[in-house]
Image (tube, rainbow, N blue to C red):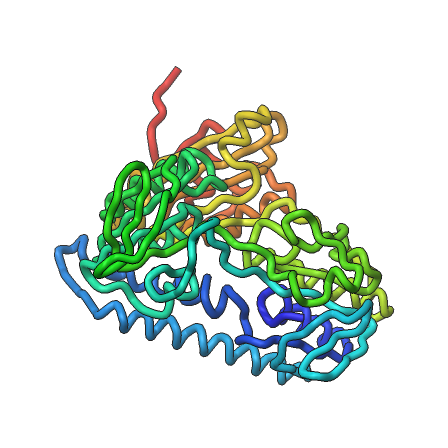
Length: 452
């Protein structure tokens, strides 16, 4: 039930394991990530980064933002179509309808009932707005409405919410010439990352021209001539549009879960055990609907585990069921030329847990220097005695890709010397992790710490 990253990977895996599979999806395949989130947003950010690089050379290239939005939609639609082709090739039957759980192994959709030995719930999540804020997707937008029309150069845009969605939208709009104000009710933006990451990203946003206000809740919105009047921090401004990016809620209501006996927590998320099975035997769940972190790559991994466990229960998977228990789930925020990435234990958590850390700035990095991001950094968190790596974070070009290598090191219990002893390509962004590991070992390569 659901064709997003929590659903379609499990459908493919179950088919690969020899099961007959039906997938229900009333919208487009790929879910929030492909259609409204990761894919179109990153497409826009890639082009925005190219524009910023040209500007550093004193060149100006200003394609109409609408053209970039068209390209983002084209890429999203192509990838969504690719998922449909994959499902077809694997023999997965696609039913384009809203599905409802009508019992342990019964699903209703489009006036029909389907019986199955196992069900995978992947309804995902939907945008959530603060109390009293009405999103009409005309002038007051959620992330889906935001992708319907590009910001015009000079347009005044208010972004409410300093999480990943709000930060990425603010960076993209500013890079394309909009005048952007970002307000966050909490004391800092990106509260899921460390304080250092948050402050570094704030500086990068301000350099792009984004006006950042933290500790500043939205006080009110009202329609006004020419736009939306917004009140915050004792200030009042008129904006062409307002993007509300204050979080998401699980899409678990109205699809028969509670009636079928599937337990939900107080926020509406599906309760699952270590094997991703719900309170109803044979009914599994994956993705955003199982709770934070609400990340597509987490959903994909859960979907594969859940499908494997469903197959194991039917005797179709050698080795039996396995737990979903990753040590590290990377989180990445795209800023155009740079990314903020974190995996495992953060710098803030390291101090509280008595762990050690080492941090290097990026003045030695070709990419950071070329893109004007030398104040970025990479940091590693490790156990003082064993040197085992337990965390990594960076605000740097390509930090998301580096976080993948760090996640591998964390999952496999590798230490500082294990990473530092591996030959990495030069000059490449992957050296961020190596430099941080060398600094932790007291042997930094590309900067001088002094003697004694």
